[in-house]
Picture 1 (cartoon, rainbow over the protein chains, first blue to last red):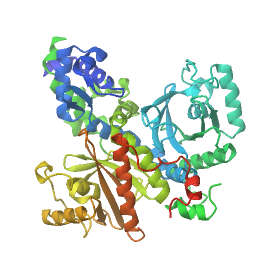
Picture 2 (picture 1 turned 90 degrees about the vertical axis):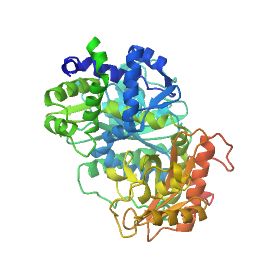
Picture 3 (picture 1 turned 180 degrees about the vertical axis):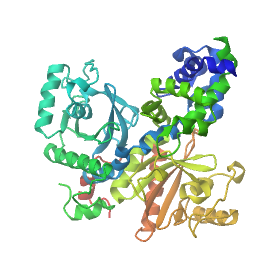
Picture 4 (picture 1 turned 180 degrees about the horizontal axis):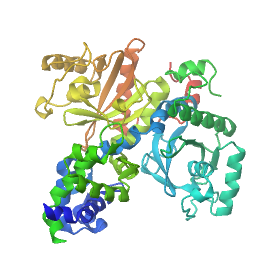
Length: 269
Length: 269
């Protein structure tokens, strides 16, 4: 097995290229996977065969998709981190109270990656789901996190094509928005900048142990959203996650399991 | 690179063994990973180095954890399937209405794997989170799915140690429970069999294209759960997911984004 030792990187890269070729929405054929991954077809076939045996890839007739084992391993990423674990109950409570879609996102390079989502607005599709990425300057979670970092710790920001006329498209627009975020006590608001008709309100969650930069956000229809109340709710929810994640005693009772009870008590507006 | 071609399986297995060693709750050292994976330490070190460069593994001082790229790839598994996509909105609505924790699970061999969870009851820990597995006979989702399969299509069932005195521990107990499930129109109820004080109510979601066996379930406190109402709700929710996933027109309006509106209209009891 000496020859295996000699070129691990090359082989790992082939496996990685093949698995990363699956990013997309539909099953792929061997020919498509070989082309996307630049792995020779015969080698790709042998590697896929082994990955199917391991449960990392599933084969159905002539197409391949990522397998359940890959999902199981990937889910370890959030299971082991304190902020995602602490956020589960808080996000569910916020969703029950306001009926708005709630996201937990993380800074990954110059993008935001969604880790958790409760609700299906503005879309149940992959673009807004867990594992999806959005550019930092375009998003409320991204800008809420930038505002917590000194510019020398910022990732390399790209200002790509603007999805709407309200999108932030330059560094000077970004800097002005960060001032507004600081005026709001750290809460970022994106009104139709990432998607027409959609307002996103985000607050940062910074951890003491430098385990990543997280943000909690809420997504609702621009025309109907009560912005003032939402800003307060998102800020409080992010603060609660921070306290739970860092083992700091909470200042108010933990969320109750029943939404009806809270509504009866005059909870949400 | 001819020597790479010769032994792909051996190299893939080393990479896979290393990555699968991460299943657990805490970061691991090189020595621990080498021991768990049975990969020689020097080889493990080189492979991990490459996986860190690819973002599949993260290194923090002397320990390793699975990386964000692994999460991103794993999330493709549910993003691309019709049932998990269709379930997002229905699960959120059910959680808003009842305040109970809602699960989407899938049959994987002789186990159930949770794919999605909304809420944090009975525990926010990994054992009840997405990616966690539970044995089929012990769980309501598992038995709801068994009841849809003829016994010749059943996985090899194991009756391990019973977590509580109410757990199903033999094939004859299981068969009696499947009769009760059929009497309930396909809905399974587990009262304290998987965990003391916890009742789980589950309904199957079978797809036309054989894309997997899914179940929707709700988890609540045994003492306070309104069993009759919950059975009806879970059965209706699973039927709605089935209709959406299969493109069948719904029989009632889709869930609204605002819980307040529904409550104002006298929605939930």
